[in-house]
Image (cartoon, rainbow, N blue to C red; front, side, top):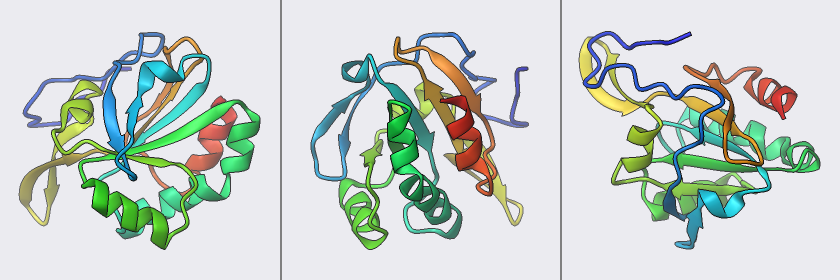
Length: 163
């Protein structure tokens, strides 16, 4: 089912399940280069989140951290993506002992390619930001499942069930 965000700068950019996931190359929290297509043959949990070290984002990251061994048992890797800097990701990862890579998309190319850069509203003020979204990508690089507008509670379990 297609979704739209009222007043979005771009019309519905939702990627359909079954479609090839857009490839990307981003820097991780250590400055190393990560290329999605290099992970072919593995399942990928690609989750987009708004901001490092904020309550919802921390809770989501920690749930993936705590369930990481189960995700690995299913042959998958976890990649977190936000527009925060490499340095911000590094601090966030160290503070919460995260055991997966956080990718820097400060140019916002990947959040746009995946259709998660949306107009948001807080206290009546409109601004652009990342809509919390997770993609499960299969071993062939195709989108198996998309979780739009993620609610953090119970999300890890939903993702694990899809792997």
